[in-house]
Length: 338
Image (tube, rainbow, N blue to C red):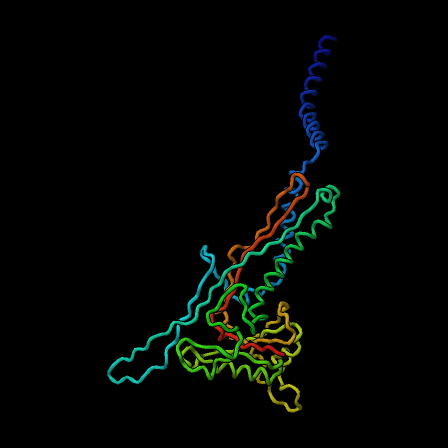
């Protein structure tokens, strides 16, 4: 009987050891993993998904005005893009038995060349080892905010530099500023009237009305009248109160009379913090703006990581390549206030 119990005991022991073996192996592996030092070749890899998420989430939450200003276009793999304007036709002639044919003049050309931009950040190994996430997380956040500022600043150049010739992203064969009182035409038609889209008046109800009349009087390539619909006002935050009073007030401003305000609801208003002159404002035809102002992301913003083996530093770099331009000036009236 004792032999039988001894054999049963040995059998139970063998089963217990068999069940215990996988647990022991797992514990041994976990111990080895815990005491194995992390190499400089993997802390950047561990941080990268976290940084990518912070970078993307931060950028998505920032207000982007580029889509409001520009029509987005591709580059089709080219270094630059050229648009050629085509002249317009004069009014129809009375038919006297023969069709009168009129040649169309070649208009001005504009070439847009996207420009490269980049920025880098780096994280020392010890910041990761010491769990300094409150410091490290600010870096990808700052990268996203810097990219946003850069893109908004470049987009706002179409307004901020409107009264001077801007050559960072494009070259225009007309050779004058977007906002100018000396626009020309290739057709040979008179430019004495309707080729001036520059004013120096401060933002007032009277100035808005004058700018509207000025835009309605714009002329085409043949000095013919064209259909302009001024329906937008763009301005910096400093002019937001004046713009609100001019466009939103039901009654005429600064008068005791109960006259209706002509400007009420006539314009869509855009306050843009990237407009850097506190006095300048702009009246636009929104439809013509979308047909004339273009933005292109030749290379969309990248955010990539690499580690330096010798210095134990993980580096992230951002890179993008973009450009913007306008084709024709007749979508805007520029108030460059002295």
